[in-house]
Image (cartoon, one colour):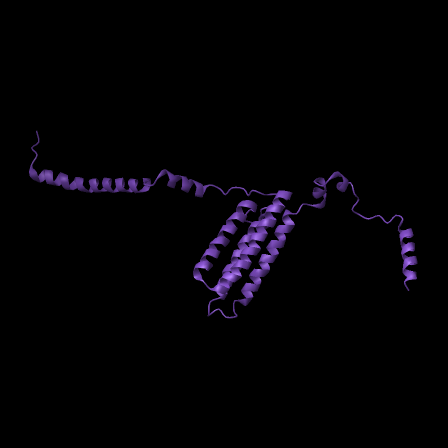
Length: 212
């Protein structure tokens, strides 16, 4: 039977210490990675999940109405923004910036966030409006001077272009619009036929000659 002496115990203890330290470090690492509530996990899953499809993805009467309302909200935000900038109050400017962010999110949710989306130009219009707003804020800085005037004009032109693209995208083609029209209207021939126009022209000439 081997006798266990104090020096041998010390050697075994010294060899065991590094293993104990490694095990403790691994345990702490696992605890750190596993911390977080269930809600945090749900938020991470939501962030990793693909973006949802926009509410409107094709021209329709409803899409046109919502796009028209959305563009009116943008126009009002730009008009109110000019008044806020003239006032120069930093809190009001910050609040208006948050409102533009909300407009952008609403546009993305309704119409998409890319030109590649069928009605994405409507969502992009909100982003263009926010870009113009931030450009106008930068134009207020003392050192900007007239150097940023070109950027403001360019941002305004982009907003107008996207706005028109939005209206063009949500507008129903004539053939589709007639399907939703009343029967009497949809049966009309929208291309004028000039049958009997000769009599109309002759009577017009006669009336005109009496006024000479």
